[in-house]
Length: 199
Ligand SMILES: Cc1cc2nc3c(=O)[nH]c(=O)nc-3n(C[C@H](O)[C@H](O)[C@H](O)COP(=O)(O)O)c2cc1C
Image (cartoon, rainbow, N blue to C red):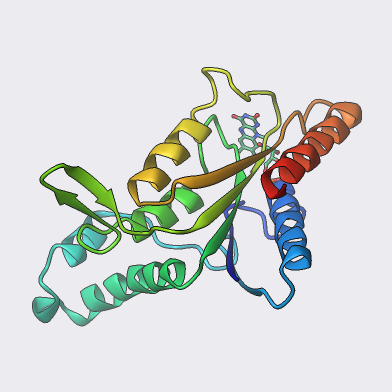
């Protein structure tokens, strides 16, 4: 088992989503001795956003790219190769302002590449990152699970599914800003979600 842990909190230290993602990885390692783990902490090595220069680089044929454009595409290539090389992905995902952090969006923008991680066929789109298990460790200050205000989970189901990652397990630590009792309950719920996901 090759596990890729992606930490998407803006915080290097003390992040609840990272704490939860660490727990998921520890439990997977305990269940699968010999599992190998790679860590990408997007607070430590933030991926550049998809801006005009990046789009220009991506849409320039490889043999015509400037050295700067080639270097920019190579950053995305590395993230694609990394996710392709792992069969389990653990995402630590905070909720920021009702959405996913820019750090995670930039990772998704990097790995979504037409003809490489998805393609269009006569019958519709086909995701090419197949056969992976994905655990999403969610950390939230409030309570959103199964409500219309939870735009994160539907978004992640859509975009990861589009890329072929359909075996998704969501682990919710919610209510973390609602006082110590609520926070403790939030982590208990996450533990229950994790037990169910690993059962
Ligand atoms: C900039 C910012 C925006 C936030 N927005 C929300 C929000 O919209 N909904 C929510 O439930 N919690 C929100 N929170 C609380 C975080 O989800 C909570 O603190 C969580 O632990 C953050 O994850 P982290 O500790 O892994 O960084 C926000 C926190 C920050 C710092």
